[in-house]
Length: 386
Image 1: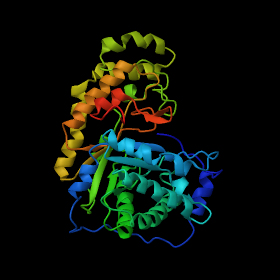
Image 2: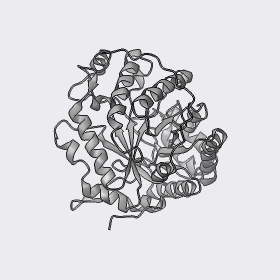
Image 3: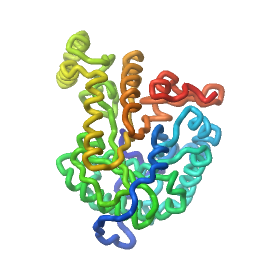
Image 4: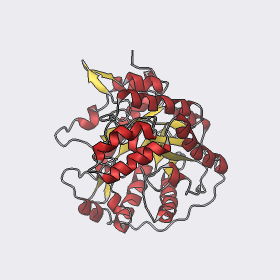
């Protein structure tokens, strides 16, 4: 959901160059396993969750205390009291890997472990999500070696943390547009690297094409049964991402896009997009598709059917609606509809996000964390920590 952000002046080129040093990781082939599947207690902890988006993804250089103070013990306890059972902790590769040595930043990883243990003390499980956002690098062999080296070292460190409360997500939203089979094969290699270093931990993986349902349906389950398959749900995209400046050119000019959709509902907005013909065409398409709860449910069912066909557990790792230009009543209706769909299926989920505006949008009032109560209630959570 963003661009590559350098850490302390680190460029992508130096990040990749530094990560190609050291021992070579020999090719591995994932073998069929007789290991048991995902333990039920781990799936239960994924029932309700939220993404922690900025702690280890966008650390400010001006606040060295950020890594120790971003979420306090009290805030973690608040998260549990409103009904969350886990967090998906987004970790940018450049934050935890030292480019000069091609090794983990030991101090930062120690702080990451402390953050995970803080959530554990609040009775929250943690999905450690390697939050890849550098789409330009996906087919760069140096970048791939960097991620392999990162997971070899990080999984070894994560091995010491409770496997019933620490899950490892291989890569956020792989794209590989037009080269989907490359991701499917590389995913096997990354899974084998992680499993060799964290034999008891559950892994989470997703399909290509931004980790959506379409990409999930292109996947083949890997030979390790202790794996959960993730998908993200941002449908309908013209509604959930209207006005998002980091997204596609078509959605950037969109404002006040209605939900549910129909040709009649979008008609008043079309004239305002006369200088943006591609956005106008997208909005016309959106109206004709008549997105509503039934259409959301039908699309969600495609993931459910894939999971049942392959006999594997699923996880909806991201969903939400960008609030800046969406009408509040339409955004709330979307959350109510999607919340009903989630409650009707045995699929764990994590809203995007705890600390970003697509979802719960935590803010502080008189020093206390406060979330969007309407979104919380729509998802079956408590509207506050009291």
